[in-house]
Length: 504
Ligand SMILES: [Zn+2]
Image (cartoon, rainbow, N blue to C red; front, side, top):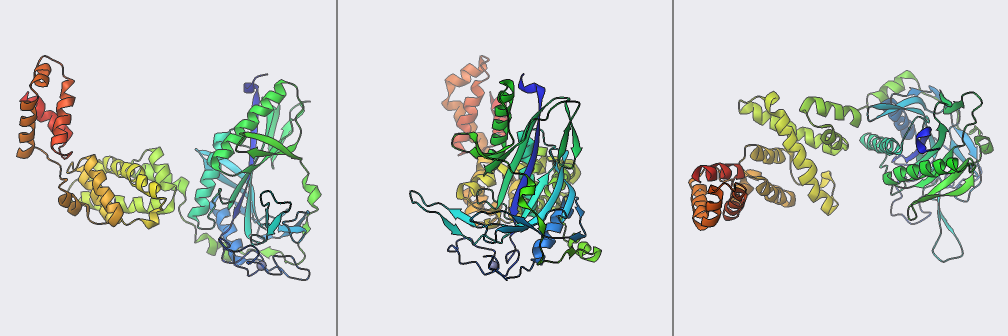
């Protein structure tokens, strides 16, 4: 049976560390980056007997904020539960998590125009970290991370392909960062993604909600596999794609599939068995006796709601409608909050400039916004990426950037001059018109100087001129190139072509 006879059924489970000041249930510093192992700990996060956990209010408010951002419902009476299991990095022998009353349920996240249902978002504490020194016969444990507030988001198994799964994780990261609640860096483990995936024969199953699919008739559902150790967006896509192929092949060869956990191996590009999956009953959940249920009254929720801001999916749509940007450009520019704010400042400067010039913004906005988007995405980011810098490190003010765009728009400079000016602005800031004059980069347009250069080029290239006159029109490009070189790149190639054609 070939792959096209199966539906891939994919669900995601994403953990994200909240960047609160203190940990989830104690006063320990939650920012442990660069700290020596086991220095950001106290009896509470080390699980000493007799200590009492006190929930972090900020962490709860951020969870609600995220839930509201994703259109979720709020359990107005929520509670924490103990999830019991043994592992060396879990000092208490249980994790404080949430079982049947998560803060958020029935939410959704829009990916490529499709609303993906989010079953729940709950709050729990992170574990410590096991460290295995190379070629040593022992392991070490760093408890600095133990007790860090951790969000867990679970989607319904409604994702149909690896690309959508990856995009979901990317959009979710953007939203966490927009809200300023998590750094959500996958490479640093601040955001961790797991996927579950099964293949079912087309037409033999139905989606029932509540994370469940049911067989139709006497069809027997194929078991699902849980994928772990996915440390990048690329790995999300590759691991799921690999697993779809592996399961398809196994089904075609009549090999039995089992419910299991498999780990993604980045080097080999394969998934390998980690363990046969336990069920949730193994955790023997029960309500955390040391933390009373948490009541979220409507006044508190209203206060949190007032902190909501426009998020990347809506911003992308608005950029498309308001500025006539392409979907591709709008998605990139809206994907990062600082970049989106910067873009809007640049565009508003351009608009003020066009209005003042007596032209109509509505008529020119498509062209202006497109030039601005190109120069932000291609040219500016070339510099930032090369230096590993963020937009917040930028020395160029939106006013000056807008002025550079205006110079390009008016053909006062050509694009190679624009790049030179941008480079100076990037290094030391400054006004692009001043830099243009300092560097003598003003475009030669219809000037006597330009006509002189063209005359010279025609005089010095008699054989090319003769060929052109015989009808070999592609020689024109060569002559334009000569003029550009003689003008040190300052000539406007369009004008050069015009004058050349007339002169010849
Ligand atoms: Zn602590």
